[in-house]
Length: 231
Image (cartoon, rainbow, N blue to C red; front, side, top):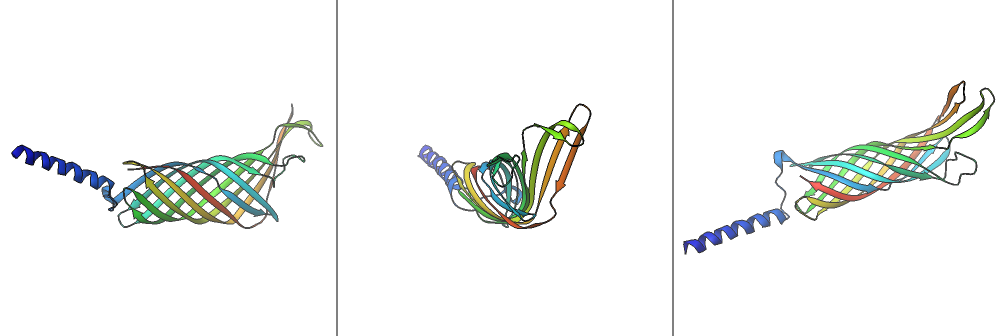
């Protein structure tokens, strides 16, 4: 009889432990915080208005992020994204129909975790950050009026300050691993454009730059999906 009682007690302990790790009850947070690290794919679509010209960017790339949610629900977030971007509003050469460049963005956020259990996490954040798209043409030969025949490279960079919000939902698929989806909306209060021409020959090297003078309101929409590790 004592053996059966001991076996039942052990079984009850195992069942209670399993229920605790899979229930929807609020997670026990070490030192009051639950931490998350994620890797995903992001596909921002942005519009900037610079010097009276609309510039659209369709981007895609890798997103790396950290998120922390406190026992009170207070939450923080930081992320970086890098990849490629496409536009048909910038011409590096007269016959360009559309060009591909590099994209990078970084953001910080403060928010609130409405739900944080082992199975589900739902959080919203106010975000501030930046976006940059850089485009560089192939080297070409140019007869410069002052430098003479030179190797010429033309490049353009556009960047923006972004303010907005994110909504993120995570679903667990294991004890620590989960999948997530988030969507963000951004207001672009300020944007800038930098045009650079570099000339090189046997005797001289010269770089000419032109900066934008004004910008108007723009926007950016930022969807992201990926995997998230909870610890």
